[in-house]
Image 1: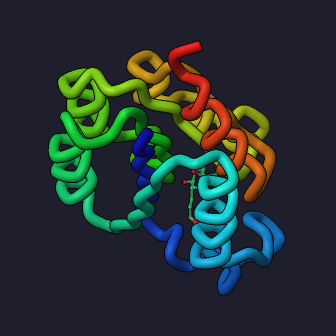
Image 2: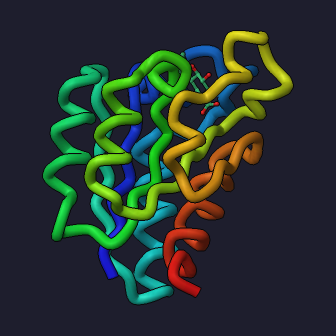
Length: 143
Ligand code: CA2
């Protein structure tokens, strides 16, 4: 099984800025955690980040026929991107939306996710552990 982890804008700053909001763990540390947990479960993972909406769209399109599931933290694009939503719907790969923070406990503009209706489910509010929950959900997506 192959799982694609996608990360949206500004997540490359994790652990370096605003640790009170998003914690002290860097994206590279989260990737290492996910690679370790994936190995334990004998699954392959790819882990990418981009600040560019179109690049994320292209990676979703290219995932067709290559990956069995996508785990995505689209960051701010969660709340704005019809392009990402359309790409997820188009490839029809089971996709899990994840967030470090609880988006429903934050500003109102973060409560709405344009991606949620085309994802299998949403994991929100568990910090770096949201990524592990995303991995476990992806591994069991066909159960
Ligand atoms: O909680 C999450 O995972 C979010 O997807 C994070 C996004 C935010 O726009 C979403 O509403 C919820 C923001 C990611 C920005 O990450 C930063 C990390 C360090 C410093 C500044 C931003």
